[in-house]
Image (cartoon, rainbow, N blue to C red; front, side, top):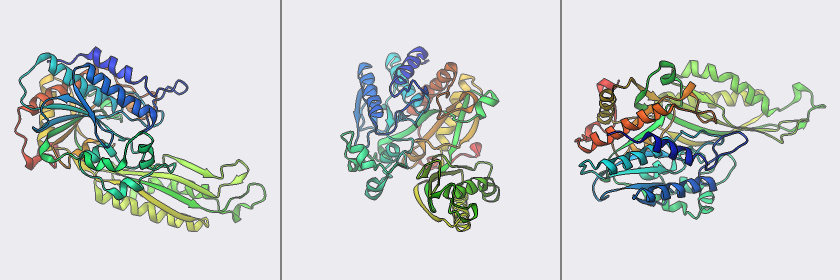
Length: 424
């Protein structure tokens, strides 16, 4: 069997019209905004037109497929929400590929005793500090977090969901039991340069990096830019600038070659050209494949910011918005994916994922695997994010083959967590 590449392409391009901004050519389907929900409604209509069943759970996840869900389900998918000014493939590829695989299976009618379903998870991009949809499926949510989670603009998750007619507490009812799932597979663009620069078609992912996210406040004193002497200021921006210069040192002393630390969003208050900034509010996102290293990085960031704050007469406060542990993919499922790539004759490499993905939470309750295709020049989370259509088709064919192989495989619970010797 082979998927219909032209149909997949047209579905991706059709979805890309929702939330498209003509000025910067970016996608704006931010979690639980009107555009995000429009995309979810579009997906359900697309599934219905293909003759599939579809429903939305209390977390906003969209499911589509056919088959008896009282049997263990093979689930595949990703997300369709985006970062501001995002690209058309991040997340959306995995969802549209899942739809294409199910349509291909319908057309060829292979004898599969396992129900096959797709999912578009809700709020994967971390607007509120987590991956709400996959966390809900995996049963990793609690009422305290649901009620207290907010974004960098202080919009609360419960209010954003209420604005779309959803009750945040119903996300607790979206959990699947382990016995309801046979496995989960996600197809995604790499969002990095490794595959593209190496001219490799497929990345077989054996583990997903952990991520922590902070919102930091450095508070000083707003003052007149012309009359306040340089040595008498409590300039919050200077504290931020000093921290940015310390990031390389922190990684060198506490991190690994897999470590990433990013200051991604900054706000200076009061934000006037002729006023010394009295407060700097910014995000810090740290990543590594080892949770022990993540803890060392977080501690180093905290100590560095405290010292910088004292040096500039600032007050330092921070809120840890999220902490996502590194997760190994299923050993057995990773081997199955590798075998399908070999049978297709595609070039491939085993690799870790530096970015977080829905699959990392599904590892909590089932066999979870992750497949990468190249991003041109490694670009993602930007309007010029792109992947070649032949790579899109290749990755989706690997997904198709993997689903068929999974349906006939006896997946061992002992290999659900962790990678095989071959993968290390």
